[in-house]
Length: 138
Image (cartoon, rainbow, N blue to C red):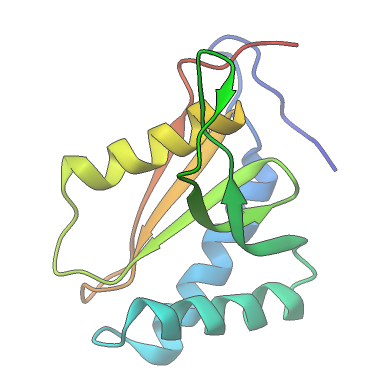
């Protein structure tokens, strides 16, 4: 289920899918508000994805390679939706550059094009679409 593929600045990649994912996040934030632990938002968002028929995998282990050698250390993405979009959740009073860097690293190791960083820890939901500048067309 792929739509709105990258066309070098002419279209937003995965526009429809992103809209649906962010809509589900807004619904969770509207229902729960701020103040819960990240794990609570993660569980609630999984339920909301099911209600909205958004395909996802939860707590996906990501392999990391160094010079073609698989490292023992793994990353863990909160969600991968539509087999193509990494969704990383936070429940903090504010986001820092390290949170964006974390998602960028997830994009690098998976060679996925898009990540969405979502923070439930503020009075209004905060989300950032992050495009993988290191994406390799294969």
